[in-house]
Image 1: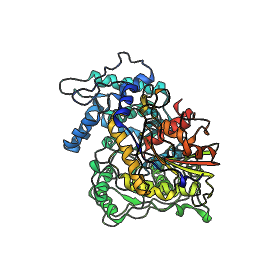
Image 2: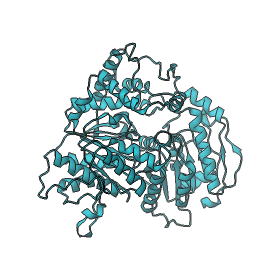
Image 3: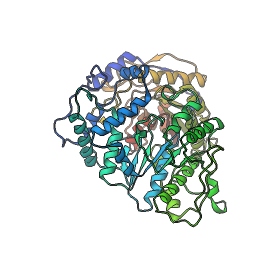
Image 4: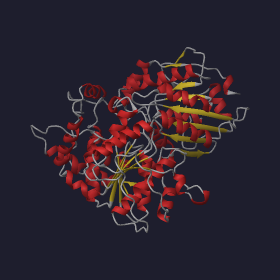
Length: 574
């Protein structure tokens, strides 16, 4: 049966009913008047990993408090001064961070991938690497890596309690606060890298650059800026120029910096930022300039957009190696650029075996990732900006060979989608429409309805009402874009065995209350990693069960990508 002839219906979610179920399934959380969890910290420093994660989660701010902070946001420079105070209370001085030989990378899209390429290449030289990134996909300890691997649960617990207890002990009438979630993890990463004596640390900026808490560092070895675009406008500004100004804030006097090819206006802003503080800035040449004899370089990350990230990584690695006497090259040093002229294109160079192998072996989960589980193929990409969704669509159309779809309905395409923040959902979904999905599924980033035992993926920065309402809005937007006739088939109050309600049969735009139910519905028991969703019958389910192949794209949010990977690759939770 063709999906085009299947009945199309809107799932009208009885929000109060689902909210009551969610509240019953999740633990109550007490929040103090200043916006942080009032849950008491564990008394002993040798608690297990999950206790450390639960305590870490108390440093998250709740949604209403975050909105208050945005409204009352003061001098951003004061945020860096506060970070310096927290760092000192933890037992470190800012000058201690100079020992870490840091590579500092920012950008709107691709900065994590550029960092991953950089870390993998430098590890091939026998260097002990540290890597700090965000967000995590499955477990918090993914954010702090040594030699490419998340630190162990034992190491995480050890350093967490050392830092947490030190900050608790230094509270007084003047320093009463604890650092918020991201600040704390940044401070903890510095402690881990110094205590574990890494040779270098690759540091990915959280948001922006100028006032990001990672920018407390004074003397990185080299800085990089990946592709720029519009994102986090409530914090960084609503124009590409304002965003470029924020990103250029990581530049330091006399520290070489590299950027990928940018549009003229943001590149001009970056040049002015660099010129003002005497920072030498180069533009990375295209990766093709390194390809000898027309043979393309093999990259471990899929997608044409990864080529610019790889090109940036090559420049960052070469500069780090040269400034730390690890690379003996015959050609003379290139002159530093004239700050009064446009940034010059950085020189090319011959890639050695370590660089070639590093590019090829790079892994970065949740970005252009393909998992083939029998007849079900999962395409997972945490794209969450307009530009990255465009890149995701290009990758998916090529990887899934869109355009060659059989007309007999033997191949079914499913979109599983969610967004976070104030992003333009309509723009994202409009870009996804040409992929010819038979079904679109919308769900929050929660792996399961209950968050008990899943502390790594708890997020208190949004309300339950908001994320579920957002899913319904996304569903309605998709139906408008695909010109679907709106039906009104309300969900039942209870599903099988008193569980969450199931969608009516034949719907082509569905809403589920968690990622587990969304993925289980899409796979219909044909993925050995996922149990079938009880009671999910109807023509749509039959269509999925009888298809020769099911192609599922999971996108719109890195957190959704993480929830999917937790379900599809159980080894990531070990």
